[in-house]
Length: 81
Ligand SMILES: [Zn+2]
Image (cartoon, rainbow, N blue to C red; front, side):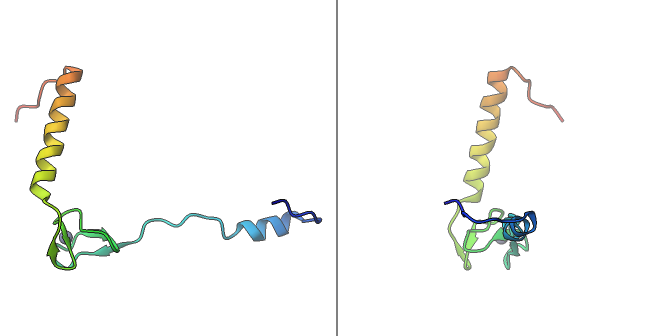
C-alpha cells in the first residue's frame, strides 16, 4: 500500500531504519561446544536437547560419496596424500 501523504527523505529513512537483516545467532553446544542454531539439532554432533537425533557419520559418508561422484563427473582425480 502506498502512503498518500508527503513523506520526507528523513521519514523514509526513519521507517527503513528497522529493515536491516540480522545475522544468524548461534548458541554453543553443551555436548561438543560447537555452534548450533537455537531450536535446531547440532550440526557437528547431531544432538538435540541431549538426545541423538541425527546420524552424523551417515551424513558425512553421504556427502563424501556425493563429492566423489561429482568429481568423477567432472573428471577430477582424487587427491593422493
Ligand atoms: Zn554438538
